[in-house]
Figure 1 (cartoon, rainbow, N blue to C red):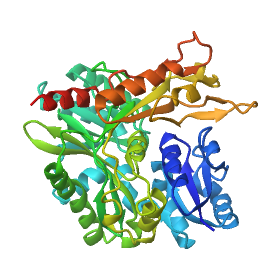
Figure 2 (figure 1 turned 90 degrees about the horizontal axis):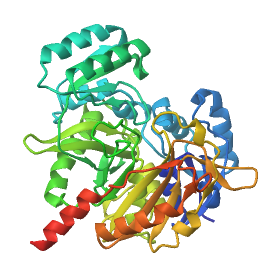
Figure 3 (figure 1 turned 90 degrees about the vertical axis):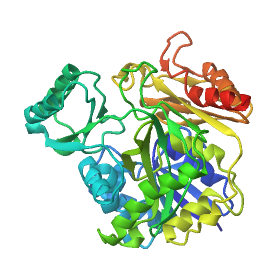
Figure 4 (figure 1 turned 180 degrees about the vertical axis):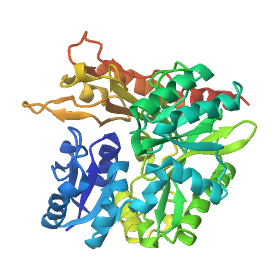
Length: 458
């Protein structure tokens, strides 16, 4: 009899994690709360948790579901329930849970808290200043005092689903953005202003077990809605990996600066219980050409769409599979050697198919019938993960969110992976064939393809 697993969340990240767990030896029944149209094909969707409702209102339902279904492992995908303390509550039940405590999740749920920890733990990051929303005039005065030659980033203090970062390109645009933040407010009722760096972004996921860790394959995501330099930020429009210009030397440095230092600080200074340090920590980095690597933010869970890319490169076996690894992290018995040889040697490209209008109003696309997924997956090594999807009365998948699908392709080179993923995408439609309701970026992984091509010539 295998281990029954509950995956909390309903996005493409959770579909990808569940997909990996479903292929793992020793898995029993697989549940998703709330799941989506894709997770229903590999497990059972349950209504124990609704992301739109406060956790405390539904805790009894979650607790009863875990007990009735004899859940032996809970994997928490999104940042919201982690910040609310879901992992803490499940641990008190004696059930292994892959997910940080609310104290540890503050590294993501409060930008001001995270910046303070970075400075105290000697983690390289941008200079910043914090303002509550009502102080927006003071923030404008602060920015004007910096001068026009110092570009800044504006970040909401709390969780904004990946859309809480503003990148104004001029002083005037910065002033307008601050005024809007101040008047409409933002999560956490405060925001930070920090110096903006330029360079290559990188996501480095670390599996953490009682404060010990090992990093997974390095990935990079594309956050802007389009390849236009001033396009709005999103939760992520695609990812690729492994990042070809990041070698073992760089990984060792990034591990020390952005993972080991903060974990040591949380354990030794903040005195966070090691049992709360079981989960996934991934720093979002900016590797600048003149100042070296800098921390952009910490995230207290798997990234989306990075998780989709990581799961496609995971060589699932009886010794190094997602169920075994996540369960051992949850129990505090994880051994980094579990992940040593278990990666495919290929390249992966993941492209997000979003509803037209994302990250803005996508209401006109909601309920549109999704066609062509099976046809897309006939292309070798292409896999489609569901995100914002549901099933209609006929059982067919329909659009139910902004980031609808993640189309992934694996190949020996980035060129081949890109060719496969962009061959697959036109086979998928939302609504009528001529409705043009799908939006996506056509340049995901292009930089890696060019780098790989140039370096093979040498």
